[in-house]
Amino acid sequence: MPLDADTARTRLLDAAEDLFYARGIQAVGMDDLRGGSGLSLKRLYALYPAKEQLVEAYLRRRDVRWRGALAAFVEEVDDPRARLLAVFDWLGAWFREPGFRGCAWINGHGELGATSEAVARAARDHKQAFAAYLADLVAAAGLPETLAPQLFLLAEGAMVSAGILGDPAQADHARAAAAALVHGV
Image 1: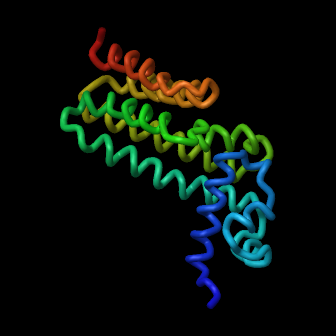
Image 2: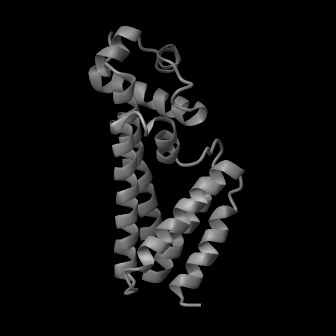
Image 3: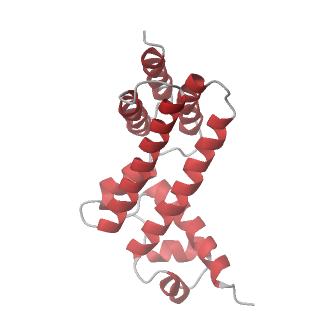
């Protein structure tokens, strides 16, 4: 029995996420996606007529899950200031996951941001949403709003450094700097 469109789309996005994140977007061809998803090339192109559309869908779906997982983790912490530091604890756990290859949006923007407005927009939207989330946490902690972009830069720098260096301790270093800012040391 043929797969319905939602099931086929999920299988394709699952394969795309695994392959794009592990190997890079440009290194993955449509045949790789066909093999990874078990779908025919005809079905792949029916779902996403252009690879750019698939890349954007992958980044947008990953964004929802990434930000949801972060928020769920942070919400487990009661103290508003400790929630800011919990962001860095969550990043550290993410950096330690098997197969961690850095930030999917930074990687995607680096590969295609100059040539694909859709990919650049998906990366910008993700980063702006993350920055807004941090700003909300800063406001809830009663701290100056100028702290939010500083924490954003610490988190983003940790993502880049952990991805390039393969060193999950970058989250710990960023957390220590964030603690100094949050506690005014």
